[in-house]
Length: 449
Image (cartoon, rainbow, N blue to C red):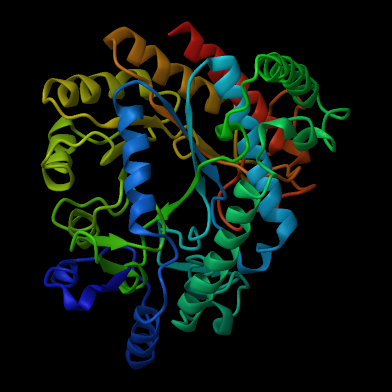
């Protein structure tokens, strides 16, 4: 299927450039051994699957489909159990059903899953009670516990990241092709949830409508295979370049490079330096690429990113994920969309309403207001409606568990509730009820376009 990228000139050109947010590995020889071992491992995804996702995202860029991208802020090695993975998948399947049926639009489903083990951080160190240690950079790099042993970057964790990603992908594939994702399961996805939640009851009503529609088609002799399985893709931030590069392979069909750690990878707001290693790495691979654009992004930067990452102007190759903040989206987004559209590039525009709306509660918990999340999505839709362009999707941090990390929503969580189930290792996530609320509201906005 594939051969290692080392055999292909150009696979490591990023190494000569400055790379932001990389771990300070104390033992370089141990790192080299781990990289050599990772290079011998089989691919986690296949190049043909990446090509298929690029085609699906091409439909998003052309205004023919909508991207639902969601999952954990940072995955954890101790959360690779069947229940946690099924709950995340179930939430995304429910959101997809709401958007497809209520929004009348094909939905491309992409998880922040099976690789989202690394996190950029604003500071390299953290100080508590006079003790300063390296900051936690995700389970792929170091441990969450505030001890010198846990916080020392350990390259062996990169192998654990691969194994955890492989286990997760294996289970996701089983769920999505083995009957669990069959549209006739729309009620089963909701059984544990419907009685206790307003959004669950609203979903159940929609599930009954979907049932009636499917019964009608069945009576007409129509039973499409598409209803029985679901296309589901894996994505993560391509942050730790030693890992991503070790899992980059030459596709034997085409001779081109693919990062086989995930179907789609993205470059974060903190690592999208035009002369930096992350953009150079992304420019060499054929996967669909996302780039996070914050409120300081200029239209010139956006156009240069297109030149570097999508010189062929291929619909589906490049997704711009905007993370402006509810108070800035209506001011900052229009010029970016106008200039990029005028350039002739066909990028998919996607809204990340999470990262620009974080604040610290009096209790010290990092949190987000559901109303701010919703307002940023509203602003995103308003801008695209005003310009006659396509609001291509949403990118959200969510979990299938009933956590108390973001305040507000139909099942309202108050600031004083945050401590009850605050389980994230990094950023606050929408819980299942808030995620479904958001899907219904986005479906309404999409219909109004």
